[in-house]
Image (cartoon, rainbow, N blue to C red):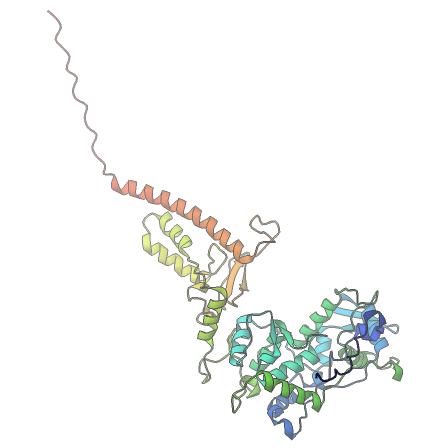
Length: 463
């Protein structure tokens, strides 16, 4: 006989029955981190200690009451503009202007961002660092599941998701942009967290949907907004019945993360040491898009990354600079191979191939670390730019313009490059063949003296 079923779960509240607060906010978004584990969670002690000493500590741990009417007023009136030539988001709250910019976020949240810091990490560096962390998931996916990481890296990513990201659902899956932020913190690479938050806020202004109140936007980053309003306008009205609920992490949530991590991820015993800035706060970031120093005693993930890339994307394409070199050699008439060598040398230091790909970039089989030092000194030709392909390899292409006859907006970049390469290759082969025929004809023919015409002998007159 089957056991009696338990009582039915309470059905979820329908959207039409939800309050404005439930629709426009999420209590687990922009949370307050808990970084004081008890002795039972010794596995997290080193990573929580690092976060407390890091530049994100104030932003993820500062607690303040948040007032929903103030946050709502900001987002209802928010728009992007400029002040003193700098981009800002401004909103009107209780007859005063609340202004948000990367500089203001950096100052209020005490993020210590450098003014010229980027807001991304090269995808190749991100993938290599995930391998170094022993990520078991698909590192080539557009999103990473935090459960595919060892416990301490998973916890760090959990803090970034709940406290610094724009996510309000699906807290297990993480975009490459947020993974890049984690990688930047681990490797001590420059990353503008304030710009990252600001761009998320700008993107929120463009969002629409049926679950939005007309004229309103999602109440994103309410805790950060309240912190800014407290600094800019400390006398704004605050009522106890107007407090917006934002959950704070606690010991129970940390223990839950630990238990779930142990069920999903089989970690080595003892766990591997943390690396990078997590192990040494004075850690110097590897140059360019590298994720480890050459003299590091840890495993080298480069061969494994190359193998995985080959399996995922197929053999790396080989782009030859033959077209440029042969043109230079053949047109010269007697340059021959010397002309080809000269053109190849130029191609590896600054020129670009017909497909918009640097000849030097592919000569090393896609190992961007092998020639990363020289890549920084490349002098790009006019109207060309550097980009990272789907492998994370640095390449060069012609800057796209709408009035360019070769620019096809719906065509993938690789397909455009292939078509340009094929077109130029055909033209080159035709030109080379004609030049070769002309050269062979001129070398094979030996000048000869003109053959004298035989003398004309006139017949004697008839008798």
